[in-house]
Length: 167
Image 1 (cartoon, rainbow, N blue to C red):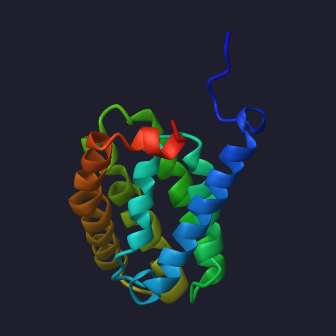
Image 2: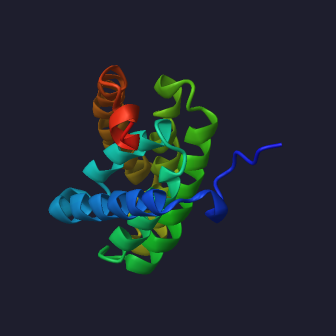
């Protein structure tokens, strides 16, 4: 039986390069849009890259690494590294499970990040939990659903998989 999971043995040099590029793009987008990438009201533009999991499940690696590196620049770095990475890991795993239904899967980042990052901001800064949860949820929803879902369908229609894999 073939192992269809993501393991290091399944990674080619091309895969590793793709993951490095994805992580780099994530970090660059967070840094360019730093003013809206952290705090309670956030529209982390880099989260648009989450749609890559629909095209390649291995992109979980690059996205997670990108989140960890990006959170090194957070004003509440240690909290953001711990909570942000946890939220991203849960989000991406659930998105992989639901990838056949992108219109549902792209709700997951908002559903997970809202309360996890809301809790992080409450613990780290004393910000009101419910308010920050709602603010993070809305920001995540705008980026990953309002913009991300149409971009996903556009990429699908343009055969992004062929471009991405160079076939």
